[in-house]
Length: 229
Image 1 (cartoon, rainbow, N blue to C red):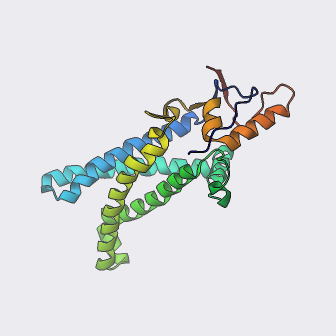
Image 2 (cartoon, rainbow, N blue to C red; image 1 turned 135 degrees about the vertical axis):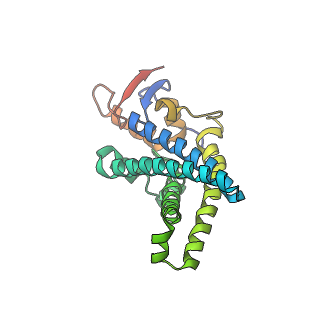
Image 3 (cartoon, helix red, strand yellow; image 1 turned 180 degrees about the vertical axis):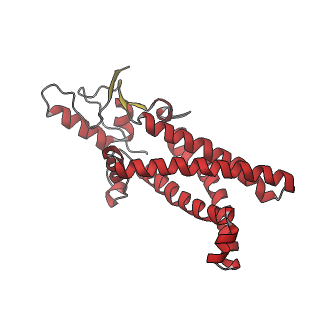
């Protein structure tokens, strides 16, 4: 994050605007935010052992939120595996040794860690959550001791997930210098040439080189060029 940005190139003006997240990706992100917030708001109070009536209401909200979260995550995974754009982004999210040495491409090392932590953490929460929602079938498959361990893992992972979102993700995506008070890419899906140059210098360099190699100087890895600010 402290590496100085690349020098601006006239082929990619700082004010040029690119589509970074398409509409489907922004909708997926919104559904995850909505369902995750509802899951945290309904799940964390259960750790305080509320009354039976309050617990029943919280559990109902928690289960509905979990269903929405699973739908959003399944949509994301299917799109990542079954579409050209999704597979390309998935390949670019694979951690590599050079991430720690060289300039960042489409995804910075912190972005990759954030993403894979979310994917694997979600898998843990879904498996343990389904076990808790259907204790009868779960206890036919595992011992009571293992079931209690699944409950403990679910609670611990929930607290960890909320803490990570409020610290790691909030800083990396929104509160770091140059972005504070908030990145708007999750709202409008757009980034500028200046943001590419600062945060994704390897991708910026590839864009410059691809334009330099074409007659009209407009080609590049980003398919949707919005225009200039």
